Image (cartoon, rainbow, N blue to C red; front, side):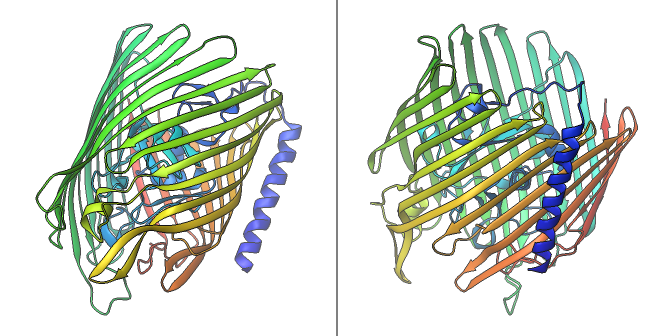
Length: 608
C-alpha cells in the first residue's frame, strides 16, 4: 500500500511538472497533426470522428520498449488492456499458457473475446478460437490500433471485448533499407532479427526473419521460435493497389508446471503456424474499399498426446462511398470457414468446420461541421446456431477543433468455438455470448496539440457466457454466465520538450465477481528522452489487485520499472542495454508461474 501511494504521488508530480513546462515552452518547429485511425471504420478517418474508444501505438513507441513481441507493448500503451505473461519469452498453450488479452475485464480461458487482426485479417486458431500470441513479432509492425469495447459491427465474432489490429510495415521510399539486430541477456536469452525493404516505382517489398530463444527462469521452461514474413505490394495506378503476404512461424517450448506442484510436470509444445493473404484496395474519388482473402493454418503437437491441424479462411469485401457532403456509407460482406481436426474427443480424426457469412452497413453523417452521428447493423449467419443481429449507434460532438465529446452504445458477441461444441465438455447447441457496452468519452488537445488527453467512462453488461457445469466425467458447457463491468480510463500523450515525450494512462475497473487477468487499477508511464546520440526510455507499470486465481481466490499487486538506453555510435550502428523489473519485484501473473526478477539484455542494431 505504501509503495502504491508513493507511486501515485510521483505520477501526479510528473504530470503537473510537465504541464507547467509545456505552458512556458513554444516549439516552433513542431507541426502537430490529428491521429488517423483505420480500424474503427475500415478506412482512414480522423480519430475525433470515431465514437468508440481507440488507442494507437506507433512504430517508435514499439522500438523504444525493446520488446520483440508486440503484445506486452499494448498492455503498457493502452488503458484498460492487460496481457498475461509467464516467462522471459514464450506464452505457451494449455492450462499453463499465457498471452491472454483482457480489455475492460473481458477475456476468457482460452482468450476468445478479443479479436486480433493483421492488416484487418482475423487471426485465431481454428479449433480453440484463441489468438496466436507467440507469432506477433515487433519487427514486422508499423503501428497497432486497439478498439477498447465491442467492435462486432465491423468484425463479427470474437470482437466482443475489442480488437487489436497489427498493421505491418511497408517500404515507403525508393531503394533498399536493411536492419539487423542481435542481443544477449539473462537466462541465456538470445534474439536475432533481420529485415529488408525495397521499393522501385510501383513495386514495394518488405521481408523479415526472427529467431528468439531462452533457457527460461527455471528448469524445463526453455523456449525458441523462428518466424519469417514477406509482404509485396504493387500500385497498379493511383486508384488500385495489390498486396500479398505470407508468414510462417515454428516454435517449441517446455513447461514445468506450477511451482506449487510436489513434483514437476514437464510439458512440451511443438507448433507450426502460417498465414497468407491477398488484397485488392481501391480508391477513386468518393469510393474507397477492398477485397481481402486470407488463410490461417497450423499444426499443434503436445507431449500429452494431443495432435491437431486447424485452419481459418475467409473473404472480406467492403466499399465506402460518399453520398453527399458530410456523409460516409460503408457496406460489406464477410464470409469465413474455420475448424480442424484433433486426435481426441467427438471430432477424433475427422474434420469439423463452421461456416459464417455476414452482411453489414455502417454510416456516418456530419451536421453543421460539429456533430457526427454513426449507426450501423450487422446480420451474421452461423451454420450452427443461425442468425445474430448486431446494432451500434454513436454521437461525436466537436464544439471546437481541440475538443471532442463522444458517446456510443454497441453490441458485442462471440460464437462458440469448435472445442466448446464438439471436443471437451461439449454442447453442440451452444449459442453466442453477448454483451452491450455503454460509454462516454472526452478527447482534449491542448497547448498547440502537444498535450493530448482522453477520458472514458463505460459500463459493459454481458450474458449467455459459456461455462462448464456438472461433475467429471459428466461435464457440459452451457450459456449461463453473466457479468457487469464498469470503469474509468484516462490517458495522456505529452511532448514536454523537443527531446522529451511522455505517455501515461490509468484505468480503474469495477467487477462484480473475480475475473482472471483483470486488475482493479492499472497505471502505466513511459518517458522517452533523446539527446544527441543517446536515447533513454524509462517505463513503469503499477498493477493493483490482479486476480491470478479464482479458485482459490488469489490476487497480486506489484510495480515494475524498466529502462532501455540506446547509443548511436555512428550512422549505421546502435548499441543498447535493456533492464527489466529493476525493482526486483516478486510477482505472478499466471498462478504458480513466478515471473522473472531483475534481468538484462544488451545488443547491437545495424541499419544501412
